[in-house]
Image (cartoon, rainbow, N blue to C red; front, side, top):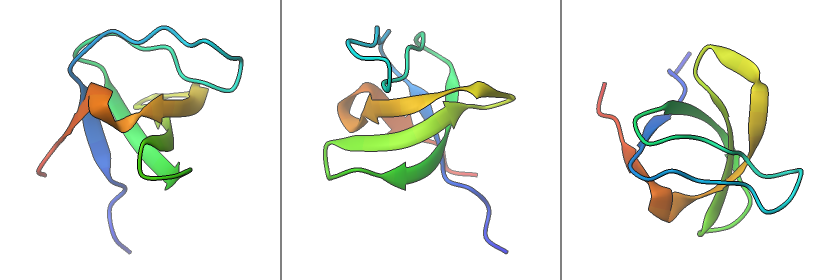
Length: 64
């Protein structure tokens, strides 16, 4: 079983729509899927209720 892909926020992001994810710089997001090459789906690590779409340009990959 492969580990979930995790990314770290490098900017603050305030959602424009209810299906988007709001997060702060430094928070870790677990990637649940991809909408397209610019928007991915995920949830805040340890806070599964905080989930939604987020712009890929706002995060950096974490190399486990």
